[in-house]
Image 1: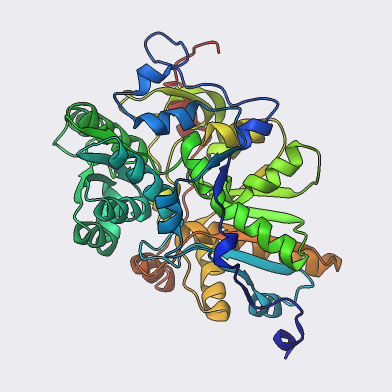
Image 2: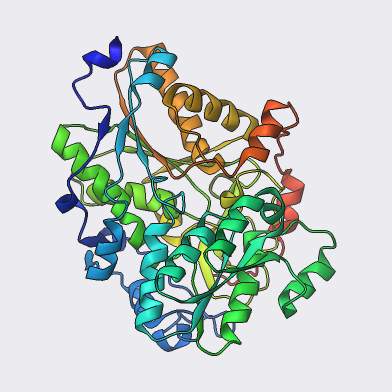
Length: 460
């Protein structure tokens, strides 16, 4: 069999002593730093004290640090990582054979922990800093439920209260992930709710809305800033989150160096940017320093095309306009995506770091329609044996497409993509696909123009 002739092991596991002991901060090597978060009232860059009512102190320091390349990982977090890290870099030999491609395909699997996704890498760090600060609990939002599940697990570990505002469509589509959060002790509320001022206002303005990550963020921030002993924690977009997720890419880089693998193409799904930013971090660092070159591809839903059809401007990070403003690729803070099944990719904006890198030409982006995404997901499940999350399957779609191009040209390229988590709590989505009920939605130019019109023109 072809699999027996491969020189590289099917699953590449690092040793425990090869788990990263420091996070890598891409901003240190960026010539054009991401634009700072600004205060929506003064339009001035946010200072440490401006962020203190929202975030934990140490996380604010990480958020603002544009200069330190490597930030040590506290020992308690390193110890927690050892429960599920290092995660395997898997050689997808069966997928290669199914496609008949000369390409070599590898994927970094981040679903081998109880929370089921890469989100735990940052959740445990954020919960640790909240505990160190002596807080009572934290609030957050979640789309597909992966971040909410991860933070619920991390808060349980540190005996912290956790209040989760879950996008309403995902709350209804993914009841099992909701119940995992509750099992870990979290309170889970569908968003927009009638429990907050912002939730009531959004429901009044958009009757019957299925919600969005922007809505859920607004509610979580309102509760955090009005509850003594609480802070808000975010699972994507922010600089601090991409920093924590760099453990993914650092492990990939170590494995590649150890086994002589030189990737040509690196692919990640893109919603807010946490998985993609973490996966590409050390490779992007090499690009920024002029040491190596790679094609880096972000894949987003056609229904929420922040990179490919958004504007690179300052916008509110949340629908309720209570959060700082970020310069990012955005569809507009008032944009509510269609209720597609990739709930974790339904954010109106993109990480300021990744937005700047994309704007400067260091990476490319494309969209995928959800029926094509699930087509790729089912092929992957059948030949590789792991049922992928809908979010991850966007990267699988692009990896397959690039591998088929290699089949046409005869090029023997090496492709690495991020498999962010498993899809075992997403069976209603697979059911819709298998029953032929899945539809593809692409917003019209007119719809986007209406949303763009609500972005404040700051001239920045």
